[in-house]
Length: 121
Image (cartoon, rainbow, N blue to C red; front, top):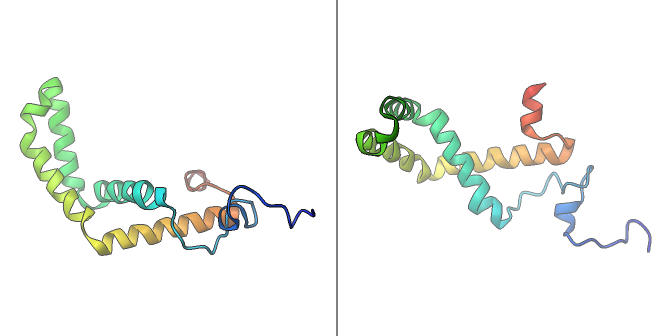
C-alpha cells in the first residue's frame, strides 16, 4: 500500500488537509461541535458582547457580598440569566456564532495555528 492508499481511523474530512487536521473547506459539524463547542461560544460571546452591564453588576455584587452572594444577588443573577437566555435562543445570533466557529476551524485547518496563539502575535 502506498502512502496515499493508507487508511486511517478517522475519515478524510477529519484527517486530510495541508496539516493533517482535516479538510479546511469541510463545513459539516460533528456532534461535539453542535452540542458543546458552539453553545460555549454562544455563552461566552453573549456574556462578553451582549449582556456586559448585567454581568458586571452581578460580578460586583458577588465581590461585595462574598459567601452570601447566592442570597444577596438573586435579583442581579435573575436579570443576567434572563439577558443571556434571550441570546441563547436567538437563532440569528447562534447562526452567527456557528459561522464564526467554522471560519476559525477552517483557518486552523489551513494554517495549523490555534486561534488563541494567533491573537498573541
